[in-house]
Amino acid sequence: MKKITRTLGLLALVALLAPVGAAVAQTGAPTTTGPTPSADPTEVPIDGGASLLLAGGVALGLKKLRARRRA
Image 1 (tube, one colour):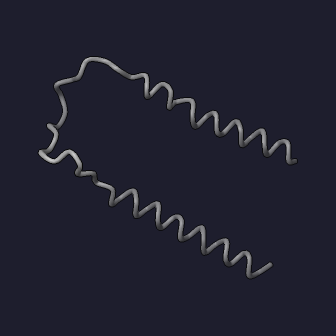
Image 2 (cartoon, rainbow, N blue to C red):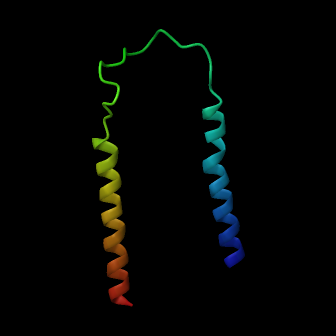
């Protein structure tokens, strides 16, 4: 069982990291379509993704604590 879990974990890791190489290799002529950059290039909208990630972490932590108390 441990060997199957390790194999599936390695397969999932490879499947998640394989597209990264293709995404980095995407180079080409800059396009003229799309929004123009703002005056301050350090403005990054992190509110939506960060809050969802934080909420997921809190939910996972609570689940682990409840499981530990039951055991």
